[in-house]
Length: 297
Image (cartoon, rainbow, N blue to C red):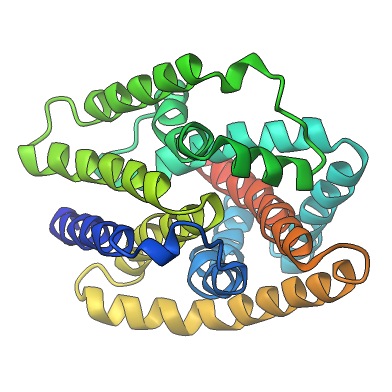
């Protein structure tokens, strides 16, 4: 798997260089394309949670799959409701949890170590801090769409953001400490790639490229390997077939949400809400499920 992940990082690095070369992409959010990629490639990596749910039920000696589905959906809907009531608190919690989630899952193949949550948080925080540093105005505008005004917050000062990015770099080195050079170069490639796309591309497009082509694909490769440890290609095909139904269903629900939101907001605003509030409603139960499995295995 390390070899596969290395070539994947190399592919992502070259993709970022390729996309950065096109000047017309630098001022374009390409929201429709971003939404399409997130609804297809992006959310698919969490589309096997129902299988993981069966694993959790087995741990707790329960056979009630209906109870799992009900609780999973309830958590997701609860996050949407809480976001509407307390947007600042939930968005802040989402950014913190997402940073940890990105840092952990993007480097989990190296051998995940518990009690290093802060290290994974700093590693993954690059996805949040880089757009704020390179495209502060556009990123603040996205936060405003989500009812969170950060324009006067000292945490988005350039000095603070530079500090966070430096810490993120050292977090990558810490995670790869005592590992082979290919592992170190893999994480450094990922770090440079994320910086590169956030420097040259608009915030939402940069996030989409990262989320779909690095984060989602890497986690999908991990799940494919778990499905078939002897034949990765067969495992990947099995993953695609098993992930497709829930991916399509989730994408359909996102589009219905967009249809209703577009009656009250401009399209750009509506898409931003669907992407980030929708991802939050999926991320919280997804992370909670993985946490419960890890703590009880």
